[in-house]
Amino acid sequence: MYMTNSIINLEHITHKFNHSVALSDVSLEVKQGEFWALIGPNGSGKSTLLKIILGLLKPSQGTIELFGGPIDSFNQQQRIGYVSQKSNAFTTKFPATVLEVVKSGLTAKKGLFKRFNKEDEQQAIDALHIVKMADRKDESIGDLSGGQQQRVFIARALVSHPDLLIMDEPTVGIDRQNVESFYSMLSELNREYGIAILLVTHEIDVVTKLATHIACLNRSIHFHGVHADYEKMSEAELSGWYGHPIRRLHQKETEPVK
Amino acid sequence: MIEAIFTYEFLQNAILSGLIIGLIAPMLGLFIVVRRMSMISDALSHVALAGIAGSLYLSQQVLFFAALNPVYLGMGAAVVGSLLIERLRRVYKSFEELAIPIILSAGIGFGAIFISLAKGFGTDLVGYLFGSVSAVSRQDLYIVMFIAVMVIGFIYFLYKELFSLAFDPEYARVSGINERVIQAAFMIITALVIGASMRIVGILLVSSLMTLPVAAAIQVAKSYKGALAYSILFGEIAVVIGLISAYYLDIAPGGTIVVTSVFILLLVLFWKKVRS
View (cartoon, one colour):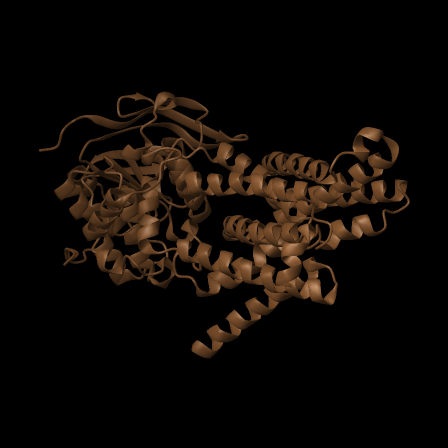
């Protein structure tokens, strides 16, 4: 069912901050329709890798291709939706409605000097429908709960119809119940809309149930492959690369979003 | 006062300039406040002081400067200051806020040197420091109008980029918005507004007109457009009440405008408390 077009192709990425190695010889390919979970302990280089993919950081060595071309000549940023950690995203008291926030996801696609019109507004409302937040469009973003705010940020990322969603620990600061429905929604986006997802997270057990592919990073890639192969790894192997003991939890499947 | 407005050109200049500044200063101020850059307008106004003082000093020494409106050199200094702040913010990446006190100190330092060299400027300088109803010339009014057109055009055409950068700068960068160019243009526009506002509000109080109406607006607005509308409304109320009282009391309008803004802010805070 999935097409095999390459969306992200990292080859032999190494990055150093001063003299310390943050990433060493990382190679990874994300193709259309895949749901990747990038997992690893604190300080494993996950955020550094995301910054490199997003073009915010230039690696010391290695090559990056986005949608089949080198990152330096990539100019279709609207094909990538980005959702950062909620805590980094905005000031809680920022005076903006949900709709204004989602429309801002169209800014770069629209181009300089052009103003939003009714069609753009409708696109934003459609994106809010996908994340089940359309009825809150006129509310102030600061009045929503953490989980609802994160849904709005996903709508902002979706509004430009991206082929890829990149998320950096999107559930930090969200309560457990909302985390599960949040991940179910991601899984639905991946399955029903064919959007590729690259998700950086600590929440290994929840995510590895939903992701189609898993990459284990601790400065270098220790494992990358399909979900079934990941499940074959023993707890001892997992603990070995993670740096401290890991035990698989066998919790029930999360409920899909109603 | 109505009759006086139709009779005296200086009053027409003051009222029209005041109304325009009451529109553009809070309008730009909203973008400054939500980006937590309120101190930048303070720093730039002190750099403008150096430019004004330099121009007034040079007008005593060089014939060319005697005929030049000091506002031009004040604005020029503020623009240079704005670009230097941007440069310093990149030099001190981990301590970006250091750029502001550095430029603010430099502005006051140069200002003090020029004032000392000229052995004081008397009422001229006081007018620039605290604003003046009588000192606004027709040429000053034209400068204010020209800058207002630039500011409104800038915000109208770059509203969505400015909103994105204000709300979530990291997301804006990732989505392909050219932050560097827009930020540089924003700083230059801010410097020009400060330059335009100083005749009416005064160098020392201009940053208040950019922040106080916004501080009140974000207490009541739910949307960004609402915050923009409230900021302008509170700014205009402050300017109108401030100018009228300055005229009747024969005092500097900068003080009356800013004190009115403070009262508006207190009223809004009180109203919000009562309501909750």
